Image (tube, rainbow, N blue to C red; front, side, top):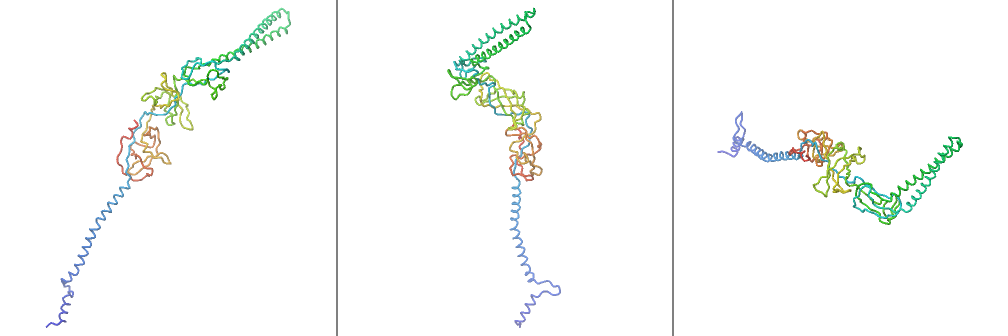
Length: 413
């Protein structure tokens, strides 16, 4: 009969480890298998949870890297045109412009031309009445006649005394005295003649004449107005001029050519004019002369352009646009103005260099075509120039080039 102590010993014997290298019992194997299974399950669950996170982290890193590369568009430099048009504003001026003043004092007796009248050189514009001057002229002519008579008498006497001197009938001193008196009378006669000529000239100025062919643009006198020689007319608040005459058959247009283009403007430069009141019409002109000196204030060259105006279509004082055709012997490359950066060290362009890294180059600007400019130095045809770069762009910054524009230089043609 088994006792409780006997059953306890059997139970201990059944859970005791095998002695002398014997294999463990099935209960012991089950005891280690459960923790291993739990550990494997935990590893699987951990792997399932970490994989999406790692993938999301890699995607985020790729997205950040892509966003760090600045998206840009590039343009390729193209040769600048050999011929270009320079458009400049100009002021149309008359070829000759004269203010007519009185050269003698008196009252305006009559005027013959008003504003807008076309006159020829020598035409009478007005007549000034000068009774005092006329009286002075008559007096001077009388004095001239007296001087002439005295000279004739002294000359005859001197000749007679010279004949008497040949026969020793008179003394040498008396003959010399008569000759000296004749010379004195000659000087008095010359003085009288000069006075008559002066007064005659002043009297001739009673007629105010046009100095050249042109148009009367101002009349500042009226009948009865008192005018003074070179002074202010009698009408209140009027300037010293009686008339203003302008020559309009040929007009002058003055323009200021920038220093960069001054060397290309000469007597043979093709040029024409356009004005707003005649859309589509070109007025042929020619470069007449230039100042041959740069204005130190505006850095421009003063150039005069002459234009024929036989039909009177152009009016003096009008605003015109002057079109100059400039030819360059050695055209460089051109870029849109949006590709330029203005930095403290000069004009700069940003390039998409090797590895799509930003490179900065300092360039020199040549001709200005408006939306395009000529790059004189610092650029090659193989450079990929970033168009419209931001002011904050720096060298070495990564960029993502979107597309190259092969037609960068076509807009100015």
